[in-house]
Image 1 (cartoon, rainbow, N blue to C red):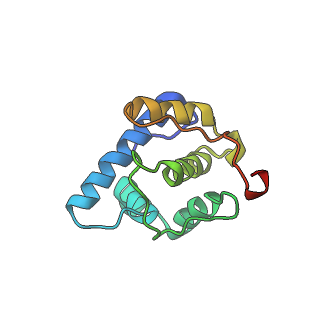
Image 2 (tube, rainbow, N blue to C red):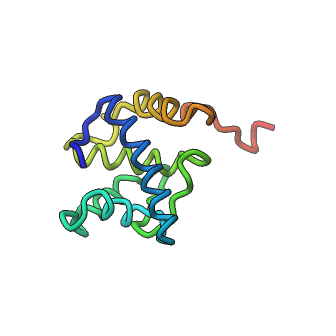
Image 3 (cartoon, rainbow, N blue to C red):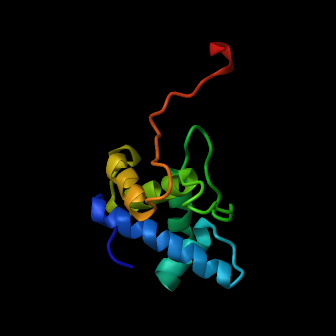
Length: 131
């Protein structure tokens, strides 16, 4: 695994590697989850504490991903994978979760998956009281 940093070229590599890992795990009939991805990328160098830290940092709106939670395919439902890559970048770079360049992460997604709709995370959510 190359070093992970807060740069657009690194994000494109991460999105592509995540999709390739998903395909590889599917061909071996393995679960596509954070723990398996990290073990696939880092091998025996990964510790349970590192996996826990990445999972802990994925908390979004109170939802924290568990190490064994199945991740959806990044091309179809990128939101959970985006949170995983954001947390991994923060942990590996030693920066805060809010310091990750989300615009670059989302642009890299659009480059790797050009047929998918772009991520629009700043979109205002409609609540039932607005109807």
